[in-house]
Length: 319
Image (cartoon, rainbow, N blue to C red; front, side):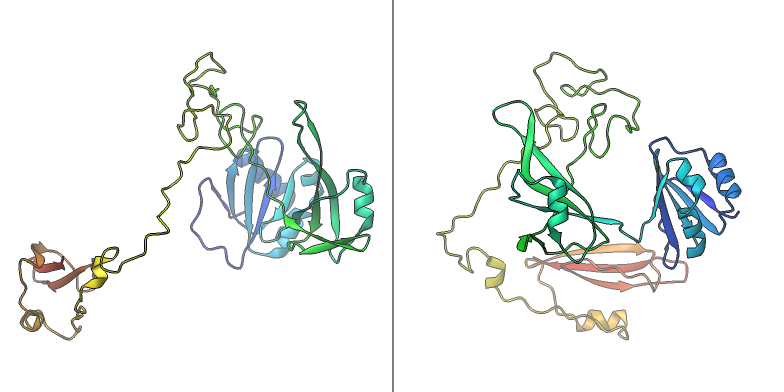
């Protein structure tokens, strides 16, 4: 079986190949154990195996038939592994608002009319202002099979708008980073949400966020960003005051032809005024003829040499 293990992001092109993502609630098997399992299941033509997280890895195939063999493997399902092709999105999630609380999830699903198949219906919860708990809201999340999301659906003949569902950000209660939970935390160190030191909690009042460094606990899901100063709308723009560069005539930069020699370029160039420009001579340049150097706002005149000695370049800038 000719495939290799990768633990970092690869820059190789995967066009024409099939990538399968495998996730599990248990940690990934070791490399040799995984190779033996794939060999026993007669899974061949594997190009690469890449471990993304301790609970997820990717398998790259040359042929789609070999990828389908892995997807339909009963041994893989017995292990509790979930796998899917990364090029295919299995489900799409949307929300509908202002759905009466008297309607159950089953009633809503049975009354929906749409061209797409609905996999599940779930009523979302919101915080209760009167109590410390949660209560049902009038927003319902719909799960559609396929990669597309309809713009609307019909409930009892009433047209209802479907909005994209944005998944909430997951925060770990061990390291207080985002994107994973305590169970799947890759760190072995407990971080304090108040002072960011290596203990579970403390009584300090000097808070510090481990994510942004702000003066608040790491439990905060938002970082304060001071508002930027707003421009005065009553102030009319003056081309001479607000944009002084546009009020002056700038002569166009003449780009030398590739067929011109260095001496011809110097002779054809106008005489520079030291008060209006900045000049800098760079000696002993070691550049090949194919090397291309461009600096914004500067003219570069080069004389390259290939006989063992360094060349020279003149860089001018109009201020």
